[in-house]
Image (cartoon, rainbow, N blue to C red; front, side, top):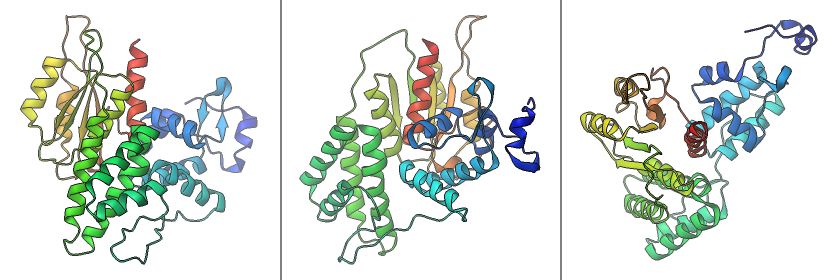
Length: 326
């Protein structure tokens, strides 16, 4: 890394701190550079310094803020709320603080906290097992906000609240979780546009790793990519490694997204194997980008793989691949 001019060094005090580039910071945090640019654009979390040519340079204070942002989003806090909390902690020079939920005193109420009003209506309908109301409210959320916002700020917070209620109630409310999950999946599929066939545009392959049954997050990604007109192939839950390898060889995808909810299912060897698959004529051979999605990949070693932390980041990362190709 080249040294910064003396006047810029002085701006960082007497410590001699040399700010990080975006690429170096992305490697340190385990996220894609596009994620950092997306957070800057969406939530105003940008670098304190820009070198000549407006290249981003991130100081230790920027790094601390982004580490807190990653911690919060990895624990399921919506990105917009995580950014607000992280910036508040940085502004007060205090230790990072968790988001605290304000629990309702109403019997059977879900611990939603500070969320959109739509979450409260959806939660009430789910607790009542009012399927028509659940279906209607989910359709309204996707129609009004689009898949990314509907997932991150309506569906996911409500699903997490149901899960917490189930975990704290001795297996009560499991029927609520099953009903809500079914209708979320239905809403995502119902509102997923099908792009027309284009032989010149390779698809994105979406699959859960072997042994992984949680599909809702990649169903949301499939729907969001469909909104952008990007081609996908969804393979769903617990795809055997041999079958996934065969599909990649047949399709020649631009990217393979592997979802792992738990560390016990994440498989770095599978990720590396898929990244090494090549096809095409000699001299113009290609290989897929591998995107590791889900909390199960935390701490896994898979050099070269991208790790978006939210649905919005995954959409930005994958759509950027297609922009680069054309």
